[in-house]
Length: 212
Image (cartoon, rainbow, N blue to C red; front, top):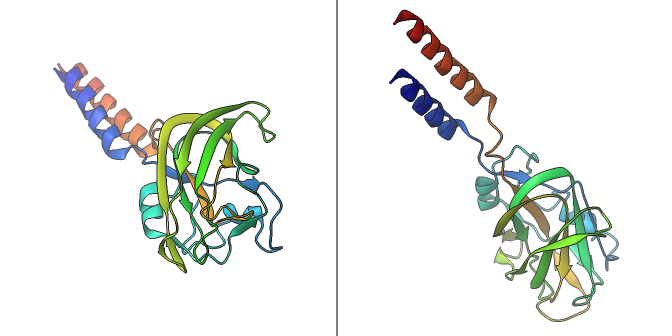
């Protein structure tokens, strides 16, 4: 009976104290040449146009993307034509990723529309695996306060992700996009508090068994 209660206690503590999904931002984003000198590919991952900043690997994903907008000012404007360009995001390590959030650009009908997402073994994507094909919505919210769009997919352990442009909203030779972040599954990593509580529960079990 005592063992069963201890196990139940540990399970409850783990459920209450486990990690939520967190924001995983790319260390770098590289891709096609930019149309405007200041609208570099790096703007997709440097938080420059976001209304609030995040700490990669720590900030809660759901609450962050729900409350953060993009100004459209610090965006990426590329020369990439439909089907002719791709951006590679370097996460700076291997992480379990199961979704993403993107802020398409306002003030323009050149925003990203259809795209494919791949997991890659290296920055050159010499070996890649298709995660899925997705539709990016036109900029949500207002032109100067674009809201995030979230997309989910089966969790994949990955260090590099490639976003391949398939179409834009006006089929021009320019693609624009605000910012991209990824959803990291951290639930499998126990918090220190959970581990401490579990140890206390098991310690209490040992004391109770000695008294009986």
